[in-house]
Image (cartoon, rainbow, N blue to C red; front, side):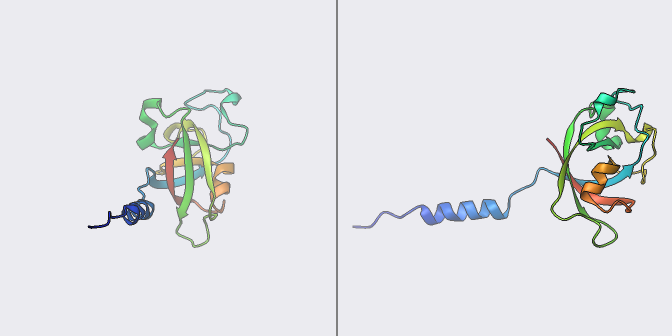
Length: 141
């Protein structure tokens, strides 16, 4: 008479495979920064109330703008690399609110073709503020 086979090793293998090959839903792009003045914006005009109290906000490039549908969206952003080693703040992920369109923002971005343009506060939270741009991983939440 044969013994019933345990499914424990098979389940363990499935869980390990899932952990090792977990697929990310995040996108990769570039982040620049922009400085005040931030008003008026394409999303909220001259309303100061559109900015979160944390000052973690951003304008977006044309790839995300979506004819204004990006207004108010929230993104998690983290720095993954930069041209200069040591630019990224390791382990920091921030949440930003989209308040403007980079193409028409009052203050010009430090790099014109960035995916996301972060407020000075937001940029400094993930990277050395003297950098012009960084490579980021970002995800809408």
